[in-house]
Amino acid sequence: MVIGIATIVLRIPGNTSLKGKRKVVKGVIARLQNTFNASVAEVGANDSHKRAEIGVAFVGNDRRRINSKLDKALSFVEAMQVAEIIDSKMEIISL
Image 1 (tube, helix red, strand yellow):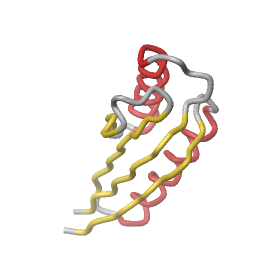
Image 2 (cartoon, helix red, strand yellow):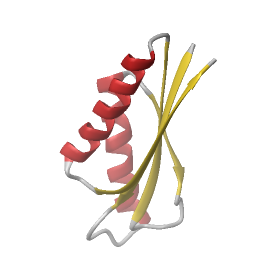
Image 3 (tube, one colour):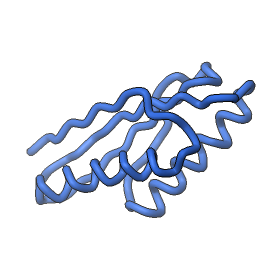
Protein backbone atom coordinates (compact mmCIF):
# COMPACT_ATOMS: atom_id res chain seq x y z
CA MET A 1 0.00 0.00 0.00
CA VAL A 2 1.25 3.47 -0.92
CA ILE A 3 0.02 6.63 0.80
CA GLY A 4 0.67 10.07 -0.67
CA ILE A 5 0.08 13.19 1.39
CA ALA A 6 0.51 16.86 0.60
CA THR A 7 0.11 20.05 2.57
CA ILE A 8 -0.62 23.17 0.56
CA VAL A 9 -0.31 26.59 2.19
CA LEU A 10 -2.35 29.29 0.48
CA ARG A 11 -2.35 33.07 0.75
CA ILE A 12 -5.74 34.59 0.05
CA PRO A 13 -5.16 38.14 -1.19
CA GLY A 14 -7.77 40.83 -0.62
CA ASN A 15 -9.65 38.78 1.96
CA THR A 16 -10.82 40.62 5.09
CA SER A 17 -12.86 38.02 6.99
CA LEU A 18 -12.99 34.38 8.01
CA LYS A 19 -16.28 34.11 6.12
CA GLY A 20 -14.53 35.08 2.87
CA LYS A 21 -11.71 32.63 3.60
CA ARG A 22 -14.20 29.84 4.28
CA LYS A 23 -15.82 30.43 0.88
CA VAL A 24 -12.48 30.14 -0.94
CA VAL A 25 -11.27 27.13 1.06
CA LYS A 26 -14.55 25.22 0.70
CA GLY A 27 -14.43 25.79 -3.06
CA VAL A 28 -10.87 24.51 -3.35
CA ILE A 29 -11.62 21.47 -1.18
CA ALA A 30 -14.80 20.57 -3.08
CA ARG A 31 -13.13 20.86 -6.49
CA LEU A 32 -10.16 18.72 -5.38
CA GLN A 33 -12.46 16.06 -3.95
CA ASN A 34 -14.66 15.96 -7.05
CA THR A 35 -11.84 16.07 -9.60
CA PHE A 36 -9.36 13.68 -7.97
CA ASN A 37 -11.50 11.60 -5.58
CA ALA A 38 -9.03 12.56 -2.86
CA SER A 39 -9.34 13.01 0.88
CA VAL A 40 -9.02 16.76 1.46
CA ALA A 41 -9.39 18.94 4.56
CA GLU A 42 -8.34 22.26 6.01
CA VAL A 43 -5.57 21.28 8.43
CA GLY A 44 -4.15 24.52 9.79
CA ALA A 45 -4.17 28.33 10.00
CA ASN A 46 -7.81 28.19 11.08
CA ASP A 47 -7.80 31.62 12.76
CA SER A 48 -6.04 33.53 9.99
CA HIS A 49 -8.17 35.11 7.29
CA LYS A 50 -5.22 35.62 4.92
CA ARG A 51 -3.76 32.06 5.05
CA ALA A 52 -5.09 28.55 4.68
CA GLU A 53 -3.48 25.12 4.98
CA ILE A 54 -5.06 22.28 3.06
CA GLY A 55 -4.13 18.61 3.40
CA VAL A 56 -4.59 16.16 0.51
CA ALA A 57 -4.22 12.36 0.72
CA PHE A 58 -4.23 9.55 -1.85
CA VAL A 59 -4.01 5.80 -1.26
CA GLY A 60 -3.09 3.26 -3.92
CA ASN A 61 -0.68 0.52 -4.87
CA ASP A 62 1.54 2.31 -7.45
CA ARG A 63 4.05 4.85 -6.16
CA ARG A 64 4.43 6.61 -9.52
CA ARG A 65 0.67 7.00 -9.90
CA ILE A 66 0.31 8.48 -6.41
CA ASN A 67 3.18 10.89 -7.08
CA SER A 68 1.56 11.91 -10.35
CA LYS A 69 -1.80 12.53 -8.64
CA LEU A 70 -0.15 14.70 -5.98
CA ASP A 71 1.62 16.75 -8.66
CA LYS A 72 -1.58 17.15 -10.66
CA ALA A 73 -3.56 18.18 -7.56
CA LEU A 74 -0.99 20.87 -6.75
CA SER A 75 -1.03 22.13 -10.34
CA PHE A 76 -4.84 22.11 -10.28
CA VAL A 77 -4.97 24.33 -7.18
CA GLU A 78 -2.47 26.71 -8.77
CA ALA A 79 -4.49 26.84 -12.01
CA MET A 80 -7.68 27.74 -10.08
CA GLN A 81 -6.11 31.15 -9.33
CA VAL A 82 -8.33 31.81 -6.29
CA ALA A 83 -5.33 31.89 -3.94
CA GLU A 84 -1.56 32.00 -4.15
CA ILE A 85 0.40 28.88 -3.17
CA ILE A 86 3.15 30.04 -0.83
CA ASP A 87 4.36 26.62 0.32
CA SER A 88 3.75 22.94 -0.33
CA LYS A 89 5.10 19.69 1.03
CA MET A 90 4.62 16.21 -0.36
CA GLU A 91 5.44 12.84 1.15
CA ILE A 92 4.94 9.31 -0.11
CA ILE A 93 4.87 6.42 2.34
CA SER A 94 5.06 2.74 1.37
CA LEU A 95 3.65 0.22 3.82
